[in-house]
Image (cartoon, rainbow, N blue to C red; front, top):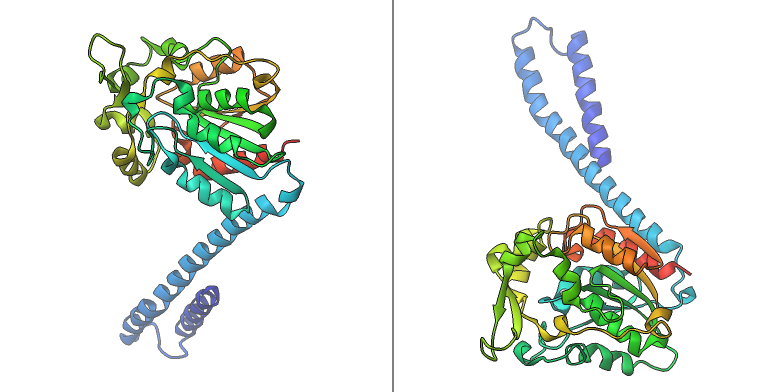
Length: 333
């Protein structure tokens, strides 16, 4: 098509030169403007179509080369592991990682996304989850069944950060790296609620979005937390595509409250031996940048990355950029 574009330009220039030198018409000939206009209608669209197609083709080639170059220097066999295990946040499910899964698998990585108890397609009743061990059981069962000597990169989002921390305490030898994406990164003796309570009074949107459910009666603590669907976009998806907001609005489930309340016991010997990395989401309306930085300062990871332009759900708002960071982390020796 680029050749068509050049041919169109050449035809246009040739005819213009002929008109200009009077090879076919004289300028004072009344037919001149009519012929020129008719020819213009034919040749100019040809030029424009060729130019637009060429630009699109160039854009595709550049995109392909960027992706190709991303993987061309990676020898997956040389990595400690090429296996990612993705752990969703509160209310989400494995479904939220669909873009990340596709991008990683295209690069040859092995990927598993876990539905925690009462999440995604898991049939367990969220209101009956009474501990973090119960909530995280699908993940711990998965890790327990890994072959001896096999390691994975655990990726946790939101309260999934507490879940991968709990798993790291149980299976430190099976975890190559732990990646926290706008996630609860706790210290021993701390609960997810302890972390999120630091935002009380400063995050009115989060408080307005929460709907506490009391399946055990009003005289008991909440059994789960739902989120106001009308506020989902502003809270979690302020930079995400509309189609992903629609997917989330029909897929999200209540968040079990007991795991949020539970304080974790994390040892330096086990949890502390796992390499940790944190990805900050600067446009996050659910977990503020200030709170993310407080967690980082209180429990410094090996390296911190900032995902420019990302809201609380970068797997929707910045999937390509998130993917490239995960690949980069996998290469860190």
